[in-house]
Amino acid sequence: MRASFLPGKDATVEKKLEDLAMHKMDIANGAVLERGCVYIVPLLEGLSLRKRTSAMGNPKSSTGRLDIFTRLITDYGTEFDRVRDAYSGPLYAEVSPRTFSVLVRKGSRLNQIRIRRGNPPSSDTAMRRLLEEHQVVESITGNQIRDGVPVTVDVQGDKSGGIIGYKARSHAGLIDVDKVRHYEVLDYWEPVHAPRRGGLVLDPADFYILASREAVNVPPTHAAEMLAFDTLMGDFRVHYAGFFDPGFGHPDAGGEGSRAVLEVRSFEVPFVIEHGQVVGRLAYELLMAPPARLYGSGVKSSYQRQGIALSKHFKPLPAADVR
Image (cartoon, rainbow, N blue to C red; front, side, top):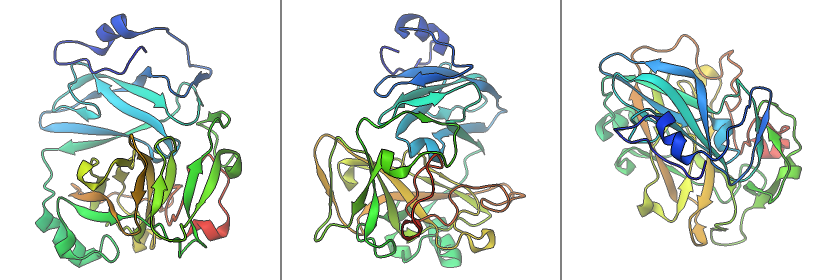
Protein backbone atom coordinates (compact mmCIF):
# COMPACT_ATOMS: atom_id res chain seq x y z
CA MET A 1 0.00 0.00 0.00
CA ARG A 2 1.02 3.61 -0.53
CA ALA A 3 -0.28 4.43 2.95
CA SER A 4 -2.44 3.29 5.83
CA PHE A 5 -6.12 4.27 5.55
CA LEU A 6 -9.63 3.96 6.91
CA PRO A 7 -12.44 3.46 4.38
CA GLY A 8 -14.83 5.88 6.12
CA LYS A 9 -18.61 5.63 6.35
CA ASP A 10 -19.15 5.85 2.57
CA ALA A 11 -16.69 3.29 1.15
CA THR A 12 -15.70 -0.36 1.28
CA VAL A 13 -12.12 -1.48 1.77
CA GLU A 14 -12.01 -2.84 -1.80
CA LYS A 15 -13.02 0.55 -3.16
CA LYS A 16 -10.17 2.25 -1.29
CA LEU A 17 -7.73 -0.35 -2.56
CA GLU A 18 -8.43 0.74 -6.12
CA ASP A 19 -6.79 4.10 -5.34
CA LEU A 20 -4.11 3.18 -2.79
CA ALA A 21 -2.81 -0.29 -3.70
CA MET A 22 0.63 -0.43 -5.32
CA HIS A 23 1.00 -4.15 -5.95
CA LYS A 24 -1.04 -7.33 -5.45
CA MET A 25 0.73 -10.48 -4.22
CA ASP A 26 -0.29 -14.09 -3.51
CA ILE A 27 0.62 -15.24 0.00
CA ALA A 28 -1.03 -18.69 -0.22
CA ASN A 29 2.27 -20.58 -0.23
CA GLY A 30 4.30 -17.99 1.64
CA ALA A 31 5.36 -14.39 1.07
CA VAL A 32 7.70 -11.96 2.80
CA LEU A 33 6.22 -8.83 4.37
CA GLU A 34 9.09 -6.36 4.54
CA ARG A 35 9.64 -4.11 7.52
CA GLY A 36 8.64 -0.50 6.99
CA CYS A 37 5.97 -1.38 4.40
CA VAL A 38 2.17 -1.37 4.74
CA TYR A 39 0.06 -4.32 3.58
CA ILE A 40 -3.69 -5.01 3.52
CA VAL A 41 -4.65 -8.68 3.82
CA PRO A 42 -8.23 -9.98 3.37
CA LEU A 43 -8.92 -12.33 6.27
CA LEU A 44 -10.34 -15.83 5.81
CA GLU A 45 -13.03 -14.98 8.36
CA GLY A 46 -15.89 -12.51 8.19
CA LEU A 47 -18.49 -11.48 10.75
CA SER A 48 -22.27 -11.51 10.93
CA LEU A 49 -23.12 -9.86 14.24
CA ARG A 50 -26.55 -9.58 15.80
CA LYS A 51 -28.09 -6.42 17.15
CA ARG A 52 -26.37 -5.11 20.31
CA THR A 53 -23.31 -7.20 19.48
CA SER A 54 -19.99 -5.59 18.55
CA ALA A 55 -16.35 -6.71 18.41
CA MET A 56 -12.85 -5.49 19.14
CA GLY A 57 -9.74 -6.63 17.28
CA ASN A 58 -6.17 -6.72 18.50
CA PRO A 59 -2.81 -8.22 17.48
CA LYS A 60 -2.06 -11.60 19.06
CA SER A 61 0.54 -11.47 21.81
CA SER A 62 3.17 -13.07 19.58
CA THR A 63 2.44 -10.50 16.87
CA GLY A 64 2.95 -7.57 19.20
CA ARG A 65 6.18 -9.03 20.58
CA LEU A 66 7.59 -9.10 17.05
CA ASP A 67 6.71 -5.40 16.64
CA ILE A 68 4.29 -6.16 13.82
CA PHE A 69 1.83 -3.27 13.77
CA THR A 70 -1.49 -4.98 12.96
CA ARG A 71 -4.96 -3.43 12.91
CA LEU A 72 -8.40 -4.71 11.96
CA ILE A 73 -10.41 -2.89 9.24
CA THR A 74 -14.05 -3.29 8.20
CA ASP A 75 -16.09 -1.96 5.29
CA TYR A 76 -17.43 1.54 6.00
CA GLY A 77 -15.24 1.63 9.10
CA THR A 78 -14.30 4.91 10.78
CA GLU A 79 -12.05 3.37 13.48
CA PHE A 80 -9.33 0.75 13.49
CA ASP A 81 -9.96 -2.47 15.45
CA ARG A 82 -13.55 -1.63 16.40
CA VAL A 83 -16.32 -3.59 14.65
CA ARG A 84 -19.59 -1.74 14.96
CA ASP A 85 -22.83 -3.11 16.35
CA ALA A 86 -24.59 -5.60 13.99
CA TYR A 87 -21.80 -5.49 11.37
CA SER A 88 -22.09 -8.07 8.61
CA GLY A 89 -19.27 -8.32 6.09
CA PRO A 90 -15.63 -9.11 5.40
CA LEU A 91 -12.63 -8.36 7.61
CA TYR A 92 -9.19 -7.10 6.62
CA ALA A 93 -5.90 -6.71 8.47
CA GLU A 94 -3.51 -3.84 7.98
CA VAL A 95 -0.04 -5.28 8.61
CA SER A 96 3.14 -3.26 8.93
CA PRO A 97 6.27 -4.99 10.31
CA ARG A 98 8.32 -2.41 12.18
CA THR A 99 11.45 -4.29 13.29
CA PHE A 100 11.70 -7.70 11.57
CA SER A 101 10.63 -8.72 8.07
CA VAL A 102 8.29 -11.69 8.40
CA LEU A 103 7.21 -14.68 6.34
CA VAL A 104 3.45 -15.32 6.32
CA ARG A 105 1.14 -17.63 4.40
CA LYS A 106 -2.54 -18.47 4.05
CA GLY A 107 -3.77 -19.45 7.52
CA SER A 108 -1.14 -17.52 9.50
CA ARG A 109 -2.70 -15.94 12.59
CA LEU A 110 -1.73 -12.37 13.42
CA ASN A 111 -4.99 -11.00 14.85
CA GLN A 112 -7.51 -11.97 17.47
CA ILE A 113 -11.02 -10.70 18.14
CA ARG A 114 -13.22 -10.37 21.21
CA ILE A 115 -17.00 -10.19 20.78
CA ARG A 116 -19.08 -8.08 23.15
CA ARG A 117 -22.77 -8.30 23.86
CA GLY A 118 -24.25 -4.95 24.87
CA ASN A 119 -21.97 -2.57 26.79
CA PRO A 120 -20.27 -4.47 29.65
CA PRO A 121 -19.73 -2.19 32.66
CA SER A 122 -16.13 -1.48 33.66
CA SER A 123 -16.31 1.19 36.36
CA ASP A 124 -13.58 2.04 38.84
CA THR A 125 -15.97 1.01 41.62
CA ALA A 126 -16.23 -2.46 40.06
CA MET A 127 -12.42 -2.54 39.68
CA ARG A 128 -11.94 -1.75 43.38
CA ARG A 129 -14.36 -4.51 44.35
CA LEU A 130 -12.52 -6.96 42.10
CA LEU A 131 -9.18 -5.87 43.59
CA GLU A 132 -10.49 -6.55 47.10
CA GLU A 133 -11.68 -10.03 46.11
CA HIS A 134 -8.77 -11.20 43.94
CA GLN A 135 -5.87 -8.68 44.21
CA VAL A 136 -5.88 -8.60 40.40
CA VAL A 137 -2.64 -6.58 40.20
CA GLU A 138 -0.06 -7.30 42.88
CA SER A 139 0.72 -4.52 45.42
CA ILE A 140 -1.84 -2.09 43.93
CA THR A 141 -4.35 -0.50 46.33
CA GLY A 142 -7.89 0.66 45.65
CA ASN A 143 -7.05 4.36 45.90
CA GLN A 144 -4.61 3.96 42.98
CA ILE A 145 -7.38 2.88 40.59
CA ARG A 146 -8.36 5.56 38.11
CA ASP A 147 -9.79 4.68 34.69
CA GLY A 148 -8.60 1.11 35.27
CA VAL A 149 -6.09 -0.76 37.42
CA PRO A 150 -2.55 0.66 37.02
CA VAL A 151 0.39 -1.45 35.87
CA THR A 152 3.97 -0.29 36.47
CA VAL A 153 7.29 -1.21 34.87
CA ASP A 154 10.24 -3.12 36.32
CA VAL A 155 13.64 -1.60 35.53
CA GLN A 156 15.55 -3.10 38.47
CA GLY A 157 15.45 -6.78 37.48
CA ASP A 158 15.55 -8.20 41.02
CA LYS A 159 13.63 -11.31 39.87
CA SER A 160 15.72 -11.90 36.74
CA GLY A 161 19.34 -11.48 37.73
CA GLY A 162 19.54 -7.85 36.71
CA ILE A 163 18.18 -8.33 33.18
CA ILE A 164 15.09 -6.14 32.75
CA GLY A 165 14.26 -6.89 29.14
CA TYR A 166 15.46 -7.25 25.57
CA LYS A 167 16.11 -4.79 22.75
CA ALA A 168 15.61 -5.85 19.14
CA ARG A 169 18.75 -5.95 16.98
CA SER A 170 18.77 -3.77 13.88
CA HIS A 171 18.81 -5.57 10.52
CA ALA A 172 18.22 -9.04 11.98
CA GLY A 173 17.07 -11.96 9.83
CA LEU A 174 13.66 -12.99 8.56
CA ILE A 175 11.12 -14.58 10.94
CA ASP A 176 8.57 -17.18 9.85
CA VAL A 177 5.50 -16.39 11.96
CA ASP A 178 4.38 -20.05 11.96
CA LYS A 179 7.60 -21.47 13.45
CA VAL A 180 7.62 -22.06 17.23
CA ARG A 181 10.72 -22.20 19.51
CA HIS A 182 12.85 -22.07 16.37
CA TYR A 183 15.08 -18.98 16.46
CA GLU A 184 18.09 -18.22 18.65
CA VAL A 185 17.34 -15.30 20.96
CA LEU A 186 20.71 -13.56 20.65
CA ASP A 187 20.52 -13.54 16.84
CA TYR A 188 17.58 -11.13 17.12
CA TRP A 189 17.76 -9.55 20.57
CA GLU A 190 20.28 -8.13 22.99
CA PRO A 191 19.68 -8.23 26.77
CA VAL A 192 18.92 -4.97 28.54
CA HIS A 193 20.47 -4.78 32.00
CA ALA A 194 19.16 -2.71 34.87
CA PRO A 195 20.73 0.76 34.86
CA ARG A 196 23.23 1.35 37.63
CA ARG A 197 21.20 4.31 38.78
CA GLY A 198 18.08 6.10 37.62
CA GLY A 199 15.75 4.92 34.88
CA LEU A 200 16.10 3.29 31.49
CA VAL A 201 16.59 5.63 28.54
CA LEU A 202 14.40 4.55 25.62
CA ASP A 203 15.90 5.30 22.21
CA PRO A 204 13.17 6.18 19.66
CA ALA A 205 14.97 4.05 17.05
CA ASP A 206 14.66 0.88 19.16
CA PHE A 207 11.98 -1.64 20.18
CA TYR A 208 12.04 -3.09 23.69
CA ILE A 209 10.47 -6.01 25.52
CA LEU A 210 10.10 -5.22 29.23
CA ALA A 211 7.89 -6.58 32.03
CA SER A 212 5.54 -5.24 34.66
CA ARG A 213 6.79 -4.93 38.22
CA GLU A 214 3.59 -6.56 39.50
CA ALA A 215 2.06 -9.96 38.92
CA VAL A 216 -1.28 -9.80 37.09
CA ASN A 217 -4.29 -11.98 37.84
CA VAL A 218 -7.40 -12.37 35.65
CA PRO A 219 -10.18 -14.29 37.48
CA PRO A 220 -12.17 -16.92 35.54
CA THR A 221 -15.22 -14.64 35.63
CA HIS A 222 -13.49 -11.78 33.80
CA ALA A 223 -11.30 -10.82 30.87
CA ALA A 224 -9.01 -7.80 30.81
CA GLU A 225 -7.73 -5.31 28.29
CA MET A 226 -4.77 -2.95 28.46
CA LEU A 227 -6.30 0.45 27.86
CA ALA A 228 -5.16 2.69 25.03
CA PHE A 229 -1.98 4.64 25.65
CA ASP A 230 -2.38 7.83 27.68
CA THR A 231 0.01 10.57 26.53
CA LEU A 232 -0.06 12.03 30.05
CA MET A 233 2.10 9.06 31.12
CA GLY A 234 4.98 10.05 28.83
CA ASP A 235 6.21 10.01 25.25
CA PHE A 236 6.18 6.27 24.66
CA ARG A 237 3.85 3.48 23.53
CA VAL A 238 3.28 0.31 25.58
CA HIS A 239 1.59 -2.98 24.75
CA TYR A 240 0.46 -3.55 21.19
CA ALA A 241 -1.53 -6.68 22.09
CA GLY A 242 -3.87 -5.69 24.89
CA PHE A 243 -6.08 -8.71 25.66
CA PHE A 244 -5.66 -10.79 28.83
CA ASP A 245 -7.66 -14.02 28.81
CA PRO A 246 -9.67 -15.48 31.72
CA GLY A 247 -7.28 -17.39 33.95
CA PHE A 248 -4.12 -15.51 33.00
CA GLY A 249 -2.01 -15.38 36.15
CA HIS A 250 -4.73 -17.05 38.22
CA PRO A 251 -3.78 -19.76 40.75
CA ASP A 252 -6.60 -22.07 39.57
CA ALA A 253 -4.98 -22.12 36.12
CA GLY A 254 -1.43 -22.56 37.38
CA GLY A 255 -0.47 -19.00 36.57
CA GLU A 256 0.38 -17.49 39.93
CA GLY A 257 3.12 -14.88 39.54
CA SER A 258 2.54 -14.09 35.85
CA ARG A 259 3.66 -10.63 34.86
CA ALA A 260 2.47 -8.50 31.97
CA VAL A 261 4.97 -8.26 29.13
CA LEU A 262 5.34 -4.73 27.80
CA GLU A 263 6.15 -3.98 24.17
CA VAL A 264 7.68 -0.53 24.34
CA ARG A 265 8.59 2.16 21.82
CA SER A 266 9.51 5.75 22.54
CA PHE A 267 8.08 8.42 20.28
CA GLU A 268 10.06 11.22 18.67
CA VAL A 269 12.64 11.82 21.43
CA PRO A 270 14.60 9.69 23.93
CA PHE A 271 12.56 9.15 27.08
CA VAL A 272 13.56 7.98 30.58
CA ILE A 273 11.27 5.33 32.06
CA GLU A 274 11.62 4.91 35.84
CA HIS A 275 11.20 1.83 38.03
CA GLY A 276 7.59 1.67 39.25
CA GLN A 277 6.34 4.21 36.71
CA VAL A 278 2.73 3.65 35.58
CA VAL A 279 2.85 2.50 31.97
CA GLY A 280 -0.70 1.26 31.41
CA ARG A 281 -4.05 0.49 32.98
CA LEU A 282 -6.10 -2.71 32.87
CA ALA A 283 -9.86 -2.64 32.41
CA TYR A 284 -11.56 -5.83 33.62
CA GLU A 285 -14.84 -6.89 31.99
CA LEU A 286 -17.34 -9.37 33.39
CA LEU A 287 -17.98 -12.38 31.14
CA MET A 288 -21.44 -13.68 30.27
CA ALA A 289 -20.30 -17.03 31.71
CA PRO A 290 -16.95 -18.51 32.85
CA PRO A 291 -15.16 -20.37 30.03
CA ALA A 292 -14.99 -24.15 29.88
CA ARG A 293 -11.18 -23.99 29.91
CA LEU A 294 -8.98 -21.29 31.39
CA TYR A 295 -5.88 -19.79 29.86
CA GLY A 296 -3.05 -22.19 30.58
CA SER A 297 -5.25 -25.17 31.49
CA GLY A 298 -4.60 -27.73 28.80
CA VAL A 299 -4.85 -25.23 25.94
CA LYS A 300 -1.11 -24.96 25.24
CA SER A 301 -0.98 -21.33 26.36
CA SER A 302 2.41 -19.85 25.56
CA TYR A 303 2.69 -17.16 28.23
CA GLN A 304 1.21 -18.48 31.48
CA ARG A 305 3.57 -17.87 34.44
CA GLN A 306 5.67 -15.59 32.24
CA GLY A 307 8.26 -13.14 33.46
CA ILE A 308 10.26 -11.42 30.72
CA ALA A 309 9.00 -13.37 27.73
CA LEU A 310 9.80 -12.97 24.05
CA SER A 311 7.39 -14.29 21.45
CA LYS A 312 6.92 -18.04 21.05
CA HIS A 313 9.02 -18.01 17.86
CA PHE A 314 12.25 -17.99 19.91
CA LYS A 315 13.94 -20.74 21.86
CA PRO A 316 13.42 -20.56 25.64
CA LEU A 317 15.30 -17.89 27.55
CA PRO A 318 17.82 -18.89 30.24
CA ALA A 319 16.14 -19.89 33.50
CA ALA A 320 17.20 -16.68 35.21
CA ASP A 321 15.24 -14.63 32.66
CA VAL A 322 11.98 -16.56 32.84
CA ARG A 323 10.71 -15.32 36.19
